[in-house]
Figure: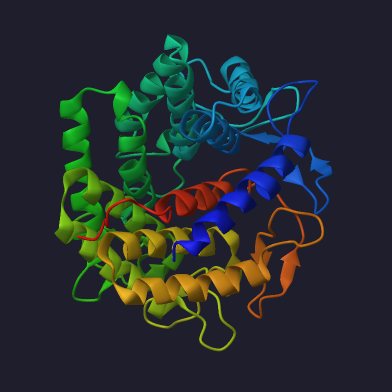
Amino acid sequence: MNNFSGVYKEELLNNIIPFWMNHSKDEKYGGYFSCLDRQGNVFDTDKFMWLQGREVWMFATLYDKLQAKQEWLDMAVHGADFMKKYGRDAKGNWYFSLNREGRPLVQPYNIFSDCFATLGFGALYSATGHEEYGAIAKQTFENILKRRNNTKGKYNKIYPGTRDHRNFSLPMILSNLSIEIEHLLDKSLVDQLIQEVIDEVMNVFYQPEHGIIFENVNIDGSFSDSFEGRLLNPGHTIEAMWFMMDLGVRLNDKNLINKALDIALKALEYGWDKEHGGIFYFLDFKGYPPQQLEWDQKLWWVHVEALVCMAKGYVLTGRKEAGAWFEKLHEYTWGHFRDEEYGEWFGYLNRRGEVLLNLKGGKWKGCFHVPRALFQIYKTLEPQPTPQFV
């Protein structure tokens, strides 16, 4: 497995990062273009705050954790300056999208814009020590906690009281965000938050009688027999489990690490397309037709997050099934998503594994999942002086 480390590092530094450095920077108005075609040409100039924050995080993290290259820091600051100037409303909530010049297009209905703004500015504070970046990250994180129980606020279209659900996405993201910005927060808050998100992820959304994590559960944590309640997203489950492994390392909790790997392995078995290969995007728990018409597509982020999870699972536990899954995922992912001709990776395949959209970035795909995964895997699989098995 150690042989993979260099492969992933080279792909990160010689393919993925140069693509975004060369094509995503808006030199005229600031911020980043994310809507890039196969060759890297800009096909739409709208700017999505969650993708802006993610790209700030990526370049700040490379500068801080890999190598202090000035061009990476400059790239991160470039995006942060645009976000600071245009990204928030008067109450500090982050818009979903802006036009190229920075005028708001979509209201701040989506708390994930705030989550990734926090992530980006928190990383930039780590890289530079500039108090302004830390203050923005901390203030935004406080807003997230205030909105935690009603993430969309006045923009929520659900009629209250009939079928209220708890959604998996926020506790999943908080399990990663809480340790990404813990350098800015009181230790007592971080410790409490970590225990809360572990409990929510592993004891509420994960239901051992089914062996599955649900995307939505009733307010009391019980199963909801509805489109939303039956919805399974294998990629979310697997990504969340490597977040749990990271928390397990932080807490020196071997049981949490092993439980997370067990859940991830089951999600892979359940979500793997045994006819065509790859991981399904969505499934219905009872096998009914999902309401998501894209349910059988194979998406980039699902597969690269699964690679991260299996790499961590193998290194932390030594379990052979994690290593076997990593190699199986590596073969499928590199064989189907990587663009040999123009660089970067495709995002969307049909069920048979054929390229469905040949874009390299858009409204949902940016400079985040692929480079983060490559970085995580390269660092995880680096040869270590002593074994890390638990």
